[in-house]
Length: 142
Image 1 (cartoon, one colour):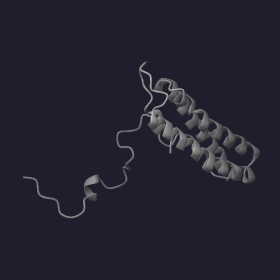
Image 2 (tube, helix red, strand yellow):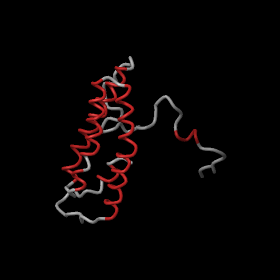
Image 3 (cartoon, rainbow, N blue to C red):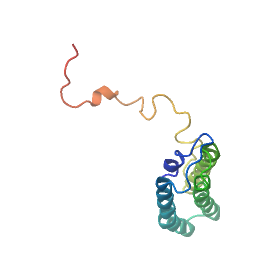
Image 4 (cartoon, rainbow, N blue to C red):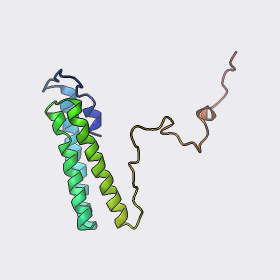
């Protein structure tokens, strides 16, 4: 679960969200549970295999992924949430590039899915157009 699936429900205006909003509470619980049961054990594995720099970055990413929940927990506005989300994404990319460097691979010097995205995203120009994927016969236009 990505935290953005919860953050999008934050208001963009001054109207508050109830502190006991069940959807947000359930999603925050699930996100935190996954952080604790999935991400934290993986961090332990990184600590066994990676350099001190990568271990530090992985620990920072782990902390950022938990810190990004604060604006949601406090039911702040979306404007308070999204800068932290982008800051967290940036830290993830720094970690990814450090891990790639450690493996002898080149850095990916840009965000994989930049914003705003191009009009044709996610499709590749080198692939056939959508019409070529239609299966079976189509009725002829009249």
